[in-house]
Length: 459
Image (cartoon, rainbow, N blue to C red; front, side):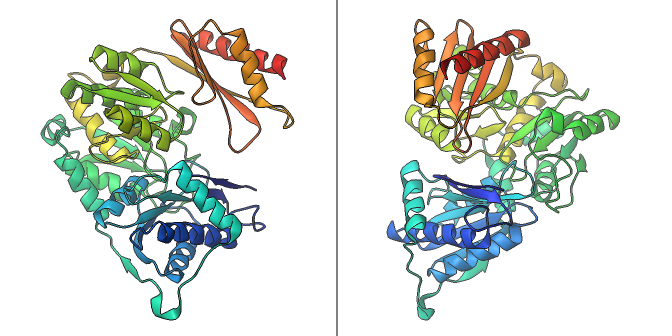
């Protein structure tokens, strides 16, 4: 069905033809390319490997592990894990890098290799290009029998991750425990089932109802934590008279919440609420990607900081956070990045910080949500004829709106007084994504529709 090669890794659907899907041959090829890059960069020849709960995970992991061993690289296999846990384990192990075997929020037929550097962060664009070049040239040199790598296992990293969260200064375990929260958690048949109940108990949350808690990889619903996929969680929060609901994606780097009446807190506002809590305790700057809500910018300014937009993509957000010395950042899809914890989206530290903030609020989570403005983002896409030059289309739209503030760092973002629209192309299909935000849902939709008409006229 699909094989997508990008600077951050390789993802695709399991089965089918080589080079058209994520076949065993392609898995070996790109694992070998990554391992070769690591050795050429003179990194420590040790790699941490972990996976989410997907059906294909064990097969993919076996191929990756043994390919790296064949290159003479030692592997620390931490088995079923989360993306943020693997990222932290790379640093704890002082490894040269890491590979996370997960297709994040994609359906069960997908899997992927996400590639990390020795800091436990996604490899840079330049390094990603080198990996792709090595794969394209089949430029690998495998080790002889006397210099094969070794494999060791370690199942202690969930506990280390939890211990680190408990030790984080702004996680207030005492306040959380005193609230005696009743929580429903949808872990969508993946590795959140193994760590989130453990984390909640450590935070003092004893009353936890787990949905889809068997790690089968046969996701009970579309695994992307969007409102239309969380009806079971919403109903369970209401029927169990819980204080809140929590949802994560299969690799536990995205996080969203459900209010006590079953309504959505809003994934865009996960970052807003956590950032507001951080900024109450630490003066500083913030970053989110350009397609995220303007509410973060407003709160940052209110708290005396500077907000900076970044291009879409975690590595871009991290780079911008480093350059602006941001104290909190992330993406509007429920991705929280706490830089003095680690530079990666992490739903687990996000839970600790969000519950700490909620515990200091006198009323329930819906009242907590009402502290923040209700902005609406209209998310759309338009298909292009593959022969169309997108740059020409964007140039024409820039000319039409030249009197409005613009940002061209990632596609084209145009500001209209208090509203904005962001246009960006897809790396994987001939489409333009159009996101528009306004105080009113109809206004956001109308802005998006107007821009879509402009695009059609420019083709």
